Length: 470
Ligand SMILES: Cc1cc2nc3c(=O)[nH]c(=O)nc-3n(C[C@H](O)[C@H](O)[C@H](O)COP(=O)(O)OP(=O)(O)OC[C@H]3O[C@@H](n4cnc5c(N)ncnc54)[C@H](O)[C@@H]3O)c2cc1C
Image 1 (cartoon, rainbow, N blue to C red):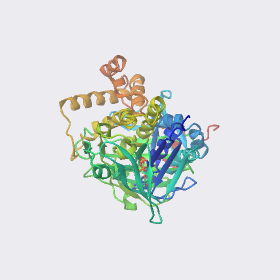
Image 2 (spheres, rainbow, N blue to C red):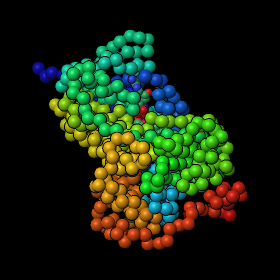
Image 3 (cartoon, rainbow, N blue to C red):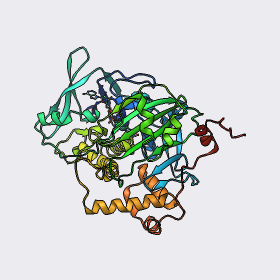
Image 4 (cartoon, rainbow, N blue to C red):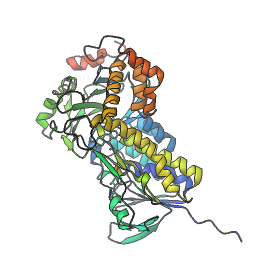
């Protein structure tokens, strides 16, 4: 007599971006997925508890947006219909790199999605929770993992009313973010601790929303970057055009130059960046909220791909939390979720060693984003963690030359853009044509200032903004 196959069960801890993307990744290959989330998740793109970073500017690079679209087709359309902007790069950015101002005459090499974080998560959540077999347990949290030192088999959950429930699963995915307690939960089962690497440039973020002084459709992302080669701490700032004709403005400083939550100092701090451009724009815009500060921004990597335990996977910030300055957290998580899906497709989630294979595959995009972040951060004064060695310093000199070249050379800017948007890995930067372009160096004089369109200039000068017809 044929036996009915055992249902394949997944348990996801944390219902943020990584948790819902993990559900999307595994829904086709499992019979039931429970997502355990501590807070209520709204049906609309509105602020919620458990996502304080949503008050800060979030760039979603093409590499992340494409991964999300491949997991949940139609998400891009939901974002754009709700007011998100698709910004072409490099032409849609006004960007001061450590090598100078980027030109904007080049064609689109990549793109980014510019939107409030609540909108990004809402579209993903709406799509993922509608998939067959996916169930959200909100107001609940894990108490402990179940299993042995070599295999996790589920978790004990405490619901909002205080009752406990045991949920068995073929695979448990921790997506509870930066504050994950997975190391303690695993230790309680006797699992040997995984190595952890921390590089902390001590970056503090301060952010504020503004009513934009001009239509945000077609408005560029404005970005003034820090220069790790300069003496002293690094400061940076971004204006992100988001839905509702608003700008979300984030300013940041490394240890020794931290912005504060004082509203009166927000524009003053913007004026201390390497260019006063952001401060000048802020003088033309109307603030519509308070200044919010975030300090927990260290790069922290837990190497779960080295864990000797099956049945357990960590995705997103729980495994690899990145300095937000480079905007890679969501994209690395999305690419990790896509890798998870591919391994599930190949071998099935109930196969022996699935979680370990998946975690190894997921470590690749995380490692690529990690190298981009720590390569810069380790050079800031007072950064804690691994200090740059000779190889790091040589690599950093090469990247700086490439960045300077990119201000006037399309080969260099396209290569850097592909890597920054996580559409290509870092080896692209040492391909012969890119090496050659770095060797040749800049082909034109550096721009004396930002390349602004007449409309962008008009806003700066407080003049009527010309329409495309005028
Ligand atoms: C200031 C700042 C700016 C940033 N800017 C960018 C950017 O420009 N681009 C970018 O890609 N990334 C950016 N990031 C990083 C990005 O926010 C994270 O990478 C991303 O949120 C990771 O998603 P996650 O789902 O792994 O974690 P989270 O978004 O933190 O979600 C974790 C979820 O788990 C839930 N949870 C936590 N603990 C428990 C528990 N015990 N039980 C049940 N549920 C629990 C939480 O409520 C939450 O829903 C920024 C981060 C910060 C702090």
